[in-house]
Image (cartoon, rainbow, N blue to C red; front, side, top):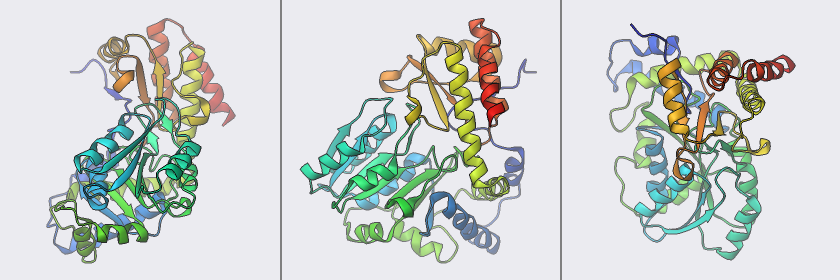
Length: 373
C-alpha cells in the first residue's frame, strides 16, 4: 500500500476527474457507427466557445505537438517565409517543426520569462514584409508566461501574414478569442485545462487560413486537414480516432459548462494569485512579473531545483515539474490548471512551508487572497 496519495501538480498532463474516467470506461464502439457519429460532431462544436470561434474544430489523434505539426504541415512548404516568436521551450518547438518542413525560417527571440513584445513583432514584419505565417505560443508553460495574442495580432498592421497560436496550455483556463483577435489557426490538446488524458489534439482554422492551405503543395497525409474536413461532414475522422477521449471530453465539457466558463477562468486566476502570493511570502523569487503571469502554471526560481523536486515527491508524494532549456535545474513549476481548486494550491504551499521549515506564512498569504476573492 502507498504511504501517500500521489498529488500531480505539473502543467500537464493533469489529474482527470473520476466522472471523466468513468465515462471513458464504457465498452469500445465502432468509430464508423451511429453512436460515435452522433456524439463526435457535437463535442467538437462545444469546443467553439472555448476557442472563441465559429470556425469548425478538427481533432487529430496525437499529442499537442501533433496539433502543432498539423498546422505546419498544412501551411508550410519548402521556402515558405515564416516567423517564429520564441520566448520559451514551446516557441522553440514551433521553429524546429518549421525547420523540419524546410521553411525559410525567421526567428524573433525574447527573454525567457518575459512576454512577447508586440511592437518588436510589428517592426520585424515591416523589415521583412515577405513573411507569410507567424507562429507563437499563447501560454508558454515552460516559463509560466501568458503572451498577449491580441496585441501580436494587431501588430501585424498591413501585413497579410497568418497568425498561428499554440493554445495547448491555455485553452479552457483563460479566454481565447480566435475570431475577435483575428487569429487564423489555434491549436490545443486534451491533457491540460480540458481535464482529459493525453491523446487528442484540436485545431481551428479561419477561412483565410483555409484558402492558404488549399494553395500549399507540400506533401502531407495523416495531418492533411482536407481529409479531416471531408470526414467531419459525415461525423467521422479519416483515421481511427482516440474514441475514449472523445467521450471523456464530452463529460469534461459538461463539467466546465456547468461551472460556467467565466467562473472557470476566474478560478484559474485565483489559483495563480494564491500561488504567487504564497511563494512570495516564503521569500522565493518568481520567474515572471505579475503582468505576464500565467493563470495555469507558476514558475519559481530554486537552486538545485531537481533535487528539491525529488525530495518533495519522495517524501510527500507531491509532483512538481522542472525547468526546461536554460531553466533546467534552476526552477520548479507548479501546475494549477484543469481539475484543480484553491485547496490544491494550499496543499502545494503547505509542502513548501514544511520543506523550508517556515510554517504558516505561505498558506496564510494565499488564504488572504482567497478571502478577498
